[in-house]
Amino acid sequence: MMSISLPEGAFIPFGSSVSKTCILGLRKKYKKDQEMNKPKNIFLGNAKEIGFETGKKKYIPTEINDLDTFLKNSHAIFNELKTTKSGGEYGWIQNEDITSKRIDASFLLNKVDRSFLYKKFKNIIPLSQVCEIININVPIYNDDVYNYLEIPDISNNTGLISNIRKIKGSSFKSTGLHKFESGDILFTRINPRISRVAIAPDEEILNGVTSKEVFIIKYKENAHIKEINKYVLVQILQSEHVKNQIVRLSTGSSSSRARVQPENFLNDVYISIPTEKVQEQISDKTFKNAMSFWKVSQKLLKDYEKIQTELGTKIDKNHIRRI
Image (cartoon, rainbow, N blue to C red; front, side, top):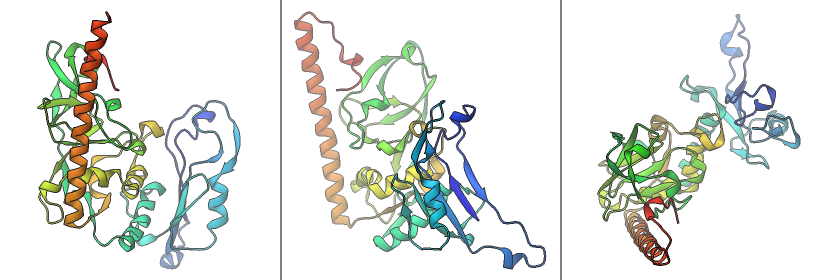
């Protein structure tokens, strides 16, 4: 038996379907002895390349095909999680570890990977033990002015914020956005591969609004991380082994629009907990660097606005999306 997840856009050349697809290999029940017919292990494959270019209307063959690799390596059971040359992943999972929650390979491979995380790190826990998502919807009124943080204003990978613009409600297409407050941890759930995890500035901006694609992460009292060290979560969420989990859990019709759902984010993403001393060092550096970058960026924008105005150019930093 098997579960193979195909990449987004696999069927666009064949009718323009953007549906994300999983191939299931099933075994027919054997009436005389169903237990004997029940497999103990299931093969999993999360393909990145399938022999032609995905996401394009025209069928363009390529030489790279993860499905060939899966076929060649599915004849013998092995314990580790393996990768193809193109970044596809494959491995085996025990039948008893599969539930009806989700049966796609990308989700199940997370469970396989988790067993290795337990071996690699001493203290592994689900995110739900240290934080929660509290998204407060803010209705948008045409005549009101909002402190607006747009997703592109959050840097890829580092999550640094350079500008938060004052925007009139009539300029928004959306009728509602998520509220954030100074010091909040902001996790961008859309396209988690580029890892936009930020800290809302603690000066001037008392509160603001951002896209509903952003989770507002709140610290939850726990025995693993003290509240004073909560910004260690920013770096943990940006770490490779956590980002890989989030990417596997994401759903969506294209890689750039893939999203992780709140319940998967909290309950199925497992993190390693550093020692308290290391937590303190990471949290302190992360917060200070984020605030320092914010101050420098704001000074740069104000100076740029002033200089350009003196030169006769009409510039408003609220119209500058990023620096």
